[in-house]
Length: 116
Image 1 (tube, rainbow, N blue to C red):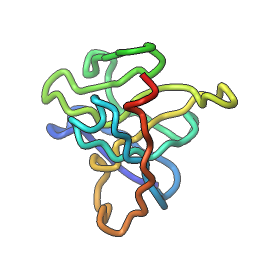
Image 2 (image 1 turned 30 degrees about the horizontal axis):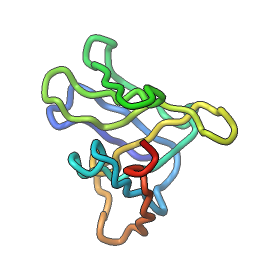
Image 3 (image 1 turned 120 degrees about the horizontal axis):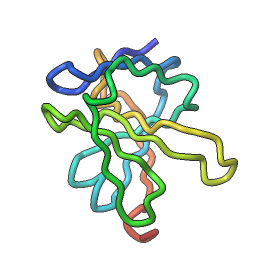
């Protein structure tokens, strides 16, 4: 079980599993924020925050619900669907997980910039 949070700690969560690898997307949103994403099924993600602790941002095709803390502005995760199966997914920003060695993670590039 991985524990994570926003910067101020108002938004906390747990994720079942271990991120073996992450996706590094080059779209304007992900690259500007420096996201390293781990995609997990929605049922493996357990949010521990009140609804008023989070706000939402959507852009482009409005298919990803980027969630961020209303206090510190940190975006620890986003909700979406697997484009192939339609299954509910969570894109976890591994930079918001506790005790993760980012240097040891295998990074897979994704060309989100040219999908827009």
